[in-house]
Amino acid sequence: MWHVVPGGETLRRWWNHPLANYALLLSTTMLLLVLGIVMVFSASNVVTYAAGDGVGLTVTQKQLMFAVVGLAAMVLISRASVAGIRKAAPYLLIAAFIGLFLVFVPGIGVSVYGQRNWINFGGPFQFQPSELAKLAIIVWGADLLTRKRKVIHEWRHLLVPLVPVWFAIVVLIVLEGDLGTTIVMFPILASLLFVIGAPARVFGVAFGGLLVMVAVLSVTVAYRMQRFRTWLDPASDPSGAGYQVIHGQYGLATGGLAGTGLGASREKWGGLPEAHTDFIFAVIGEELGLIGTVSVLAMFAIIAVVGVRVARTSDDLFVKLATGGLLAWIIGQALINIGAVLGLLPITGLPLPMVSYGGSSLLMCLCAIGILLAFARNEPETAAALRARRGDDRTRLITPRVRH
Image 1: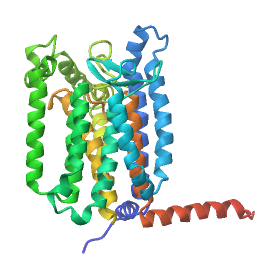
Image 2 (image 1 turned 60 degrees about the vertical axis):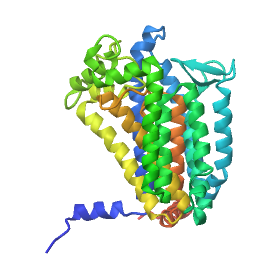
Image 3 (image 1 turned 180 degrees about the horizontal axis):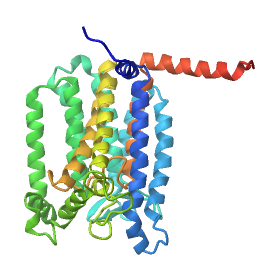
């Protein structure tokens, strides 16, 4: 006869608590955010100090600013109703398209590293509309498919207008030169179609289309083709195209189990390009070791598990669809970034969500987490537990304490 130990019973009860999803998602996000700010400072302070910033805080201050704005947006969105989020869907899509068009307007659009995908708001304030486009297509697509659920078995209702609108966004992103975001758009679409129950052949066609698009975009642009060759054999050009990959792997190898210590990275001293953006995972591996990298993977795994739990327990199709899309975006992008650092995938220039430096990415990711928190809050048992806790707090405030 099996006996449950008290510790295991406590863990099981906590895991099944009505507030578990909400608490896990919120706490894990905050841990990732704090880790990201600390590592951005550690990875960037040398470069910013060399550029003339006396204490090397320029990059970190910008990240903190976007973190504060993002947290405010996350809290605000987390208190929204599911109906309210659905009502915002068309406005998000319109804003995304306006932003994607504005990057081509001279004087407004800004080119960074050959990619014209930024809007300049004056001074250091810039925004990347393609990050908003990810969120917009997920919320709008989920709302669209929910409204069409009774006729979704017909091909024209399954694919139109979702796929044409998605394709229009992808074309604009491709014209901006952003291959990384283009790749992320595919798992987002695939997740929406998977949750709604699209036939398997649809995914075969989508995967084939992805391979063709990546091949065409890589062959037609020299530096992308070089990235592909570097992925196959980084050592073929160790001081050129393979330099970043090799030094990223040096950083990971140097860290060992516990790392060299926070702030003690050697690669960030000019050896590893983009240490605070695309390759921050390598700095984490060097300074915090295998323990740090596995912890990052564990935190993204927790977000994925909690998201799946929220989707499975919800009776709302919109919640299921939107949660699937948001997870495909955040977890998919994290895997692509980490895969590139490990040398398992070609370099795409995608940041590690909520960890890498990048205000637009951080802001939109926190908005996405806000939506997931709203879904968790709106679960009947969670909502009841939150109301009960608020009631208990009020009771404590108005009930006089009796001294014995």
